[in-house]
Amino acid sequence: MADFDAILIGSGLGSLSTAVFLSRAGKRVLVLERHSVLGGFSHTFKRKGYEWDVGVHYVGQVHEEGLLLRRLTDALTDGALKWAPIEGVYDRLEIAGRRYDLAPGVENQIAALVREFPEEERAIRKYFELVLKASRASAWFFGEKTMPNWLSRSVGRFLRRPFERYAALTTESVLRGLTANERLIAVLCGQCGDYGLPPAKSSFAIHSVIVEHYLAGASYPEGGARRLAETMRPVLESAGGKILLRAEVDRVIVEGGAARGVRLVDGREFRAPIVVSGVGAPATYRKLLAGVELPEEIEAGLREVGPSLPHLCLYVGLDRSDEELGLPKHNVWRYVDTDFDATFDRWRDDREAAPPLVYVSFPSAKDPTWAAAHPGKSTIQVIAPFRYEWVAEWEATAWRKRGEEYEALKRRWSERLLEELYAIAPQTRGRVAHHELSTPLSTRHFTGNPSGEIYGMEHSPARYRQRWLRPRSFLPGLFLTGQDIVTVGVGGALFSGLITAIAIVKRPLFLALFRRSKRYSEKTLSRAKASWAST
Image 1 (cartoon, rainbow, N blue to C red):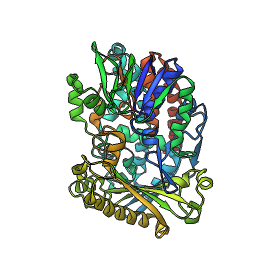
Image 2 (cartoon, rainbow, N blue to C red; image 1 turned 90 degrees about the horizontal axis):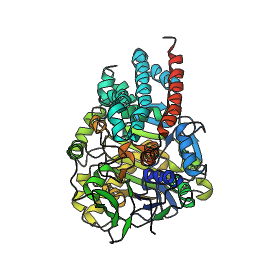
Image 3 (cartoon, rainbow, N blue to C red; image 1 turned 30 degrees about the vertical axis):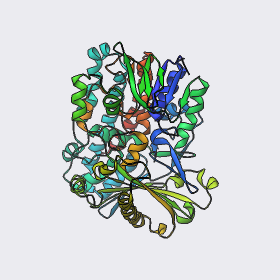
Image 4 (cartoon, rainbow, N blue to C red; image 1 turned 120 degrees about the horizontal axis):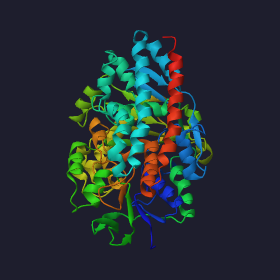
């Protein structure tokens, strides 16, 4: 356990993908994970014969071999990771008692929306045009992050500018520039839970990236979310990489003005000329570099951009199969009103108020291998936003030892989320054999995220003004990876690994990579424009 070229802090998908790429570039890497299992938000856990993922519910742009993200997952796993497409509808929106389905294809979604809102056809078509343009511009924005600082200062602004124009706008401001129809705006924002902000607070750029990510459909990893880390691990280890579990990093060792290694909470030290943190920018700069003076740009940015949304998740195990219960593969988003911002604002002031949205995922129905391994059983997850402040009084207590008052709160919310489930899937009533609730304190315990946040730094316009959110930190030898330097989701985490590895090995691979991405985006846009030709 000596002579490492790089040390990775955390084993989320950003860290693991960085580690695999560095290993393939000939570097000997060590991955340190505080938890007892790999994968970060892609890991799974088991209870009483059931198994649930904790953060992967669906992934776009992996259903065909030629797609960019599919090429990336194939490269990271040597093709061992298999994907099961979610045929047909992938998201169902239930908004103020009305239902809207999202199915693959720009043309299909435009046609469905025009049928529902015939007087808004022009606005709908313009909306999808803007979404595709903003998403296409993201390739150059994130690719520019691989550049060394001197090159970024001279030409980087030309690559960033197209995306930054969209990133500076809120989703609400763009949509209200297209239509005054409140119900249409709500439908177009129906996936806002995927990035955790209502329309008036979210950046239109991230909204566009998420919407476009799923336009061609969605898939789920065969064997569950744990297969992402499981299929990357042998690729890493075959290249000489090492992994240590239950190895929590206390701080980055800084000597001579550069990162030189890490010290664990148990006192062990590991040395390497390259340290890569995958635990998020705030935790890296506030905790792992405690005592190190930060540049004012970073200090100001950490004050300006807050954490993303914490949540409750009810893990439900049922005593019947998905087929017997008729459970769907698609996810369900349920909103109490069309005014998302108003309902979020009301909810923030009252812990007992109805959540502004509830998200239901049916993981066992999505996984074609589930039934053979777990006959006669199925699983569901019911997710709702929840403020960290509402459980902060118990943060000094230990997991599973937080006291009766905390357990009573969990019981109340478990029952409330079960009622939400029964309203969406009434056939599950009487079939629940086990359920277990996680709170923001659970997320904090397992991930170290200070506020129990699930999406890193919030995806607001302010986030995309932070030039320091790049793979290279201000400190020589210290790099960042993970969703804070790209964006939320599996795709964002995996691409963060790619651009961090490129930044470290100093190979201009992003040019060829994003030429392929640009061709894919232009093909999507040209198909959409062809369908609009009649107008």
